[in-house]
Length: 161
Image (cartoon, rainbow, N blue to C red):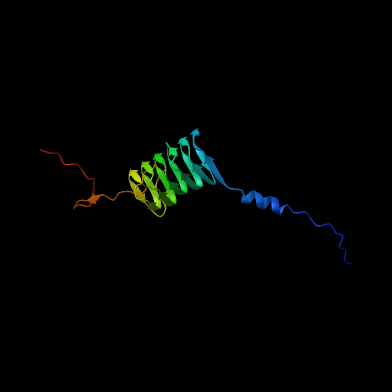
């Protein structure tokens, strides 16, 4: 009735668990140069140079020795190095005191340490992907001004006489 000699099913739970517990961070080490696009569903840490786009479904971390000559797109970003391009972060962007960003920043939330250098415009929104189009311009249309007849007018530059 009770047979204790039955073979137990071998489960491979430990193998799956160890695979899932492996670090999911891609690394571009100091002294390494990558020409092209890096795209990952995980996090990426850049201590070297990326000459191209860096896109992550997770977090992009640019260390103080890191350089990106292209755009960054990520859920979160922590920047201490040099960026020459647009930065699009759907959640939180952290700019360390050694960070230098030459380009526009699109983010929901930003924390900038004293000393961080930003040469570009800030675009803050709850939904970065929705509020910007593929060409990087805001998808919200300007309402402009209306004259007394109700027709739209664009702002014009006055000529000096």
